[in-house]
Image (cartoon, rainbow, N blue to C red; front, side):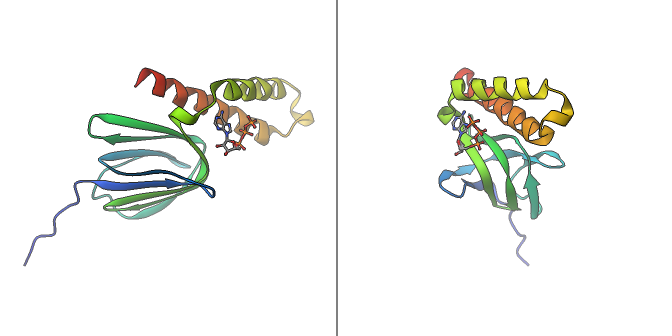
Length: 143
Ligand code: ATP
């Protein structure tokens, strides 16, 4: 009987409702699942997970790619990772001054008394802006 061979790469696809951001053969992916960051290698057990606000990192040979993602789902198969993101940007496409302005607005809102603000909305805005700034910095320093 033939021994099944394990896949050596993953086809990574990242899409949002309005565009496709990534379609590449990669060796490793890390995604921000609601339960925490999840590392995926070829041959991973199939699963479906919900995403929170965070950073997606992938490795293609010696190169790394970074994206900001906010909400959506990831489907993992042994040779394929598909991310259906509500919102996502590649590191190079992040507008740093826009993210910095959003961070400042969120910080001002979160400094107000809790009863006066939509706390969850302000928290998400803060998280998105901080992750965008972090991802943009990684692209510039090639971390
Ligand atoms: P802002 O408060 O600056 O409008 P936001 O966090 O409310 O930002 P989102 O609702 O997260 O914006 O995203 C709306 C659209 O704008 C999405 O397509 C997202 O990819 C894009 N976007 C938001 N902020 C940035 C940014 N700093 N750089 C590049 N694209 C961004």
